[in-house]
Length: 480
Image 1: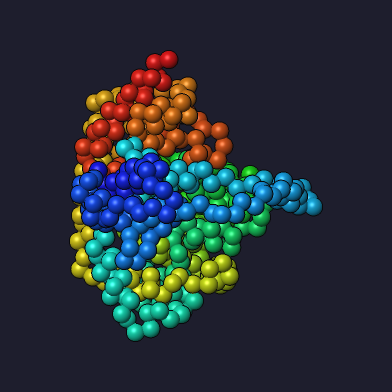
Image 2 (image 1 turned 90 degrees about the horizontal axis):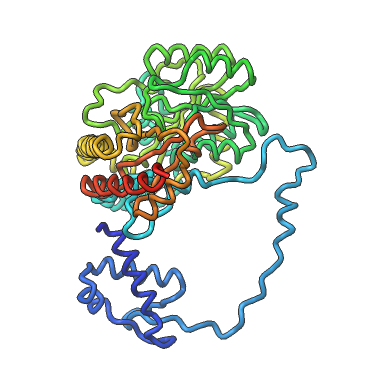
């Protein structure tokens, strides 16, 4: 059981036992809880902290933890917020795109499943895969740097911009790099900068639900362009530009989410030419370049490394290879577009906190960084192989069109007429959290799909058990 589950279970147990103590009554000491539940002092501290955050417990330095006394005053009556439905919808003009924002496609990979549920829907590395020690040491060293807590340059620390430029390669320079607060923030800035509200934006189909949510929240109209195992199909991309007049295409050329496809070399050239002829930008979401598997071989360069005309706007991040809280990214562009991206990023967030930028520099400059990437490549390959082997043996009805050599998930084709919602619900009852395929499509899906992540689970045993539980859910739903 990993630490997060232990904390949640202990917090739940303590919450259920709070009625044993009168308001203001003292809870058992940390030492007593450690001995009783056979957990670490850190687990006890975090569990009690969770109850404090919920307002159920209060701590007193040197005295211990106590059950919170109920407030003596009656709560204020609930207000009437129904007027907001009109205010949030009325615009004085016909809306081209609904103004409501649907974040469910994003939260499915951010939500923490209940204790005991295997996390096949996670979008980040399991704590055992994260370089926690290296990050902690980097943050400690960063905090001691002269000026570490001062205001950084608005574009980012020069040394960090130089590092990102060097890792991208080609003719990219540090002057073309903006340091941002994560890949999601970079994509948001890019779409706001490059397309006006109401405009169409071309997207891969299927594609990352978080990007679809960004587009819709910016008032844009996502238009799907199908992909196959070699990436986006150039002829259909050209047709989409002609039919819509779009000026932006968002893609993931390397280990595409969710298919895992890598854009074929000949298609890279065609795609850039098609976009240039259409007078359009290509937003390159290079989100998992650092999550290549041990058998991946040499990776193609980012698209922007081969683009001299400012067609490509590049987004990459350190988050996927480190921790969901290590939100440091690069936004790279050339020409007037760079000035607009810079202005929007400054208006939205001012700058990325300097201590985090300094920590990023410390991390990527340490010997621990290449060691971590090598270990991660080996571990991800082993997990991918464990999952594919288990699926092939137990669930041959779930087709696996492509086995990627990078990233952290598999994209499965379900039998025709499968009810994705019913399967997801049955799997959760069986103790495994899944990601249905429908949110990955901006229009009607051509078939039912399922995405399984192998990075957020504890290891091989949990993967095998997760497939067994998924099998039980499939028996319930697919045999109806």
